[in-house]
Length: 138
Ligand SMILES: [Zn+2]
Ligand SMILES: [Zn+2]
Ligand SMILES: [Zn+2]
Image 1: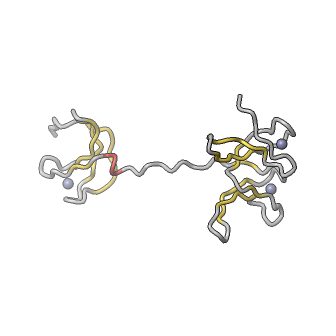
Image 2 (image 1 turned 90 degrees about the vertical axis):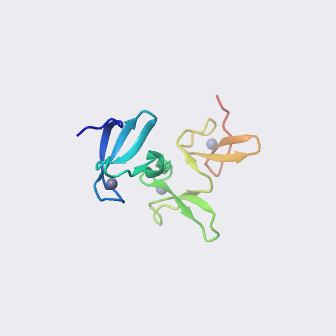
Image 3 (image 1 turned 60 degrees about the vertical axis):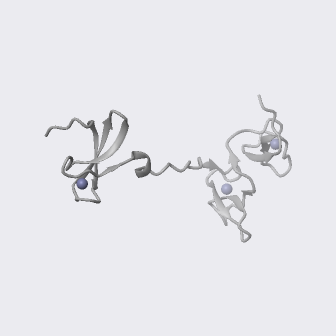
């Protein structure tokens, strides 16, 4: 097989929509592209950017500061507002209204902070109902 149109980076295990042969990820002179293994008979070509879905940033799981067993997971309230509740509910009723961030409060030592959007930027606040102090940024 003589291919002067870029070397194979990997076999994608996906059938060519034109001829049914396997698609290959190749490195060509002008960058990466997806080509048909049946080339040059089949001229199917695709940009690899279109093929690969952008990865969703997965929310890091933050453990519940109250029961230390559960993790805080994103939920939607009846009004469509996001909040973050302990997955041990109803055993544990801990919940916050802002994205939880792992950390310690500089003032009371509470083991959870939340991220709040302000006009001046994002701030971290203590998640404790009794404290709610904005953390000094280092
Ligand atoms: Zn093909
Ligand atoms: Zn909990
Ligand atoms: Zn605090």
